[in-house]
Image (cartoon, rainbow, N blue to C red; front, side, top):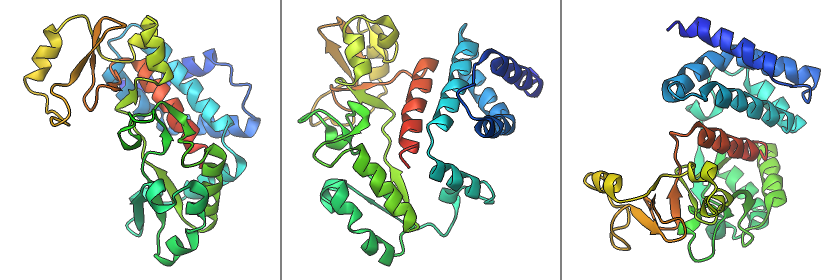
Length: 280
């Protein structure tokens, strides 16, 4: 396959079929320029993974739409930062002069507001980025230290809220420090809205996870899968009584592995990442 020619034709058809009138003329020009620069790489990798599926083109088209919506929702100061960084030879996180710190908000804050008050201290250390461990909404008791995410768009209320996270991000940027969030994309909590929809019998959302009617395939996987928490439970699959199915749960029974063989999952998790990127 001539991927170069195919990607150009595919992009032309996608743009012809999408209504991007929600973008300003300036953003539309920026978006199409970026697509022209990067779509070939996206197309090649997307088709490598999903090209055998009958609806690959549809999902790729929806992904482009999601990317456009992400640009629309990006605030002006972040767009200015994007433009400034576009002239750099390397992406900022690939630069050898970066100095970072990783921490849990509750151990360093213990809230987002109190963490913001420590920016002068971070500045004195010479930090250029602050990496926060998972701070998203998660079920009390079954949170796995924040790694069982029930909502990527909400902060654990013990730590603060999204407005406070956005304020922290801006204050860090003003101090010359980038904010990095630990993003959990292998699995969600069984209380995430996708999992809840799957529990109601919605097949679209059941396909967001790895579900099995019997032990045939899980038993084959179990021969080589490494148990993550063998002191807590054995095996990597959990029987769900409501769905009458086995769920792939690599870490804990309440953390359902996402099914990335489904392009809808890739697109959905991309939208969650874009939301967080637009927080700053």
